[in-house]
Image 1 (tube, rainbow, N blue to C red):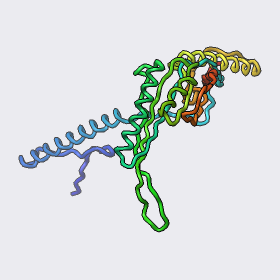
Image 2 (cartoon, rainbow, N blue to C red):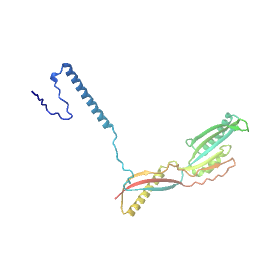
Image 3 (tube, helix red, strand yellow):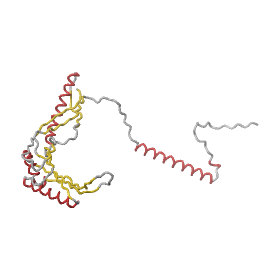
Image 4 (cartoon, one colour):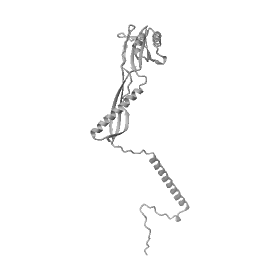
Length: 273
């Protein structure tokens, strides 16, 4: 006699049913352990996936070569202003057979410079040391090693003179009486921020005028300002720096005081209406 076995159809991917009734106690405990381990692994993977998703950076899609909206132009302005300080750089140089002798000689020169500076009414806060150097002097002979013949000491002092018209007189005084060997003068603004602010306002107005002309030519109108950036290159606000080779015979030095140029450039972006 033929025996037929009829079973329920199983869905694809589903786990086969296990008859736990026929399992031994050890087999049942093993199945429970395996099921718990599978659940733990699934929970760890899910938590790790959530953490990775939370820390992943957002992807931003940028359009390469996109023309910025509105009108972008630059504005330039120059403000001419009279300087209010003169900065004098004076140098003292001295030689000696030994380093100590050179140091003493240059110190004596600098002391005379400082005495003259005080006589000119220059305050201590406007006197700064700008460098000190001492170096050996060599004699060179063909086929011989260089030989030290003495030492030279050099010291530089910076003086701020608040009467710009007295710059020439100050130079004359500082080089007299075996004082400074060299001197140079430049004119500047003690605080250039106000002049820079005026130039910046004029530069923005210049940029607006350029943008309005461009919009008129294109048949549109300009709206509000979207962005403004300062395109000015860093530059000292000072007059022309003139090196003066001076000697003790220098007299009646005349140094003309000219206006300073404060230059500002800005980039402005405006809406189109």
